Length: 175
Image (cartoon, rainbow, N blue to C red; front, side, top):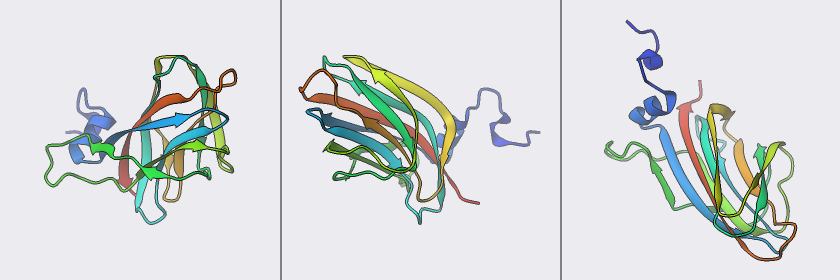
């Protein structure tokens, strides 16, 4: 009756991908400021065999000082990258739990901005606010690519900022 799985009424692509065990969500916590940056991103390893579809990202500011952030595609980063331990498949009813092939990495107190790649836009995150951006899977990164949020140090303060970056994404095999 239906040609595509998501032609069912009220079926969204993230829901469909979650049912299949392909949707993941995660959070990182970063500290930055005093002329230092922080970043968090979804990194698709060269040998992953999957395409990364970015569905949503949030940037949270739990401090009293506003800051700006940038969104980058396929960039090179510096700093000590750490794998977040706060991530999960969205569908926790599957056994065994699916594991993402894409890596959710972050770094804090980094002394340089990303290089190469493409800076696609920037935004401001007011004090004690969370910015949410629904991307609906339109940013697609191949193996070796990445989707990155880079937090800029505040221009008017040397105080440390506490930020939170979260992502929701799905993965599909490369064809």
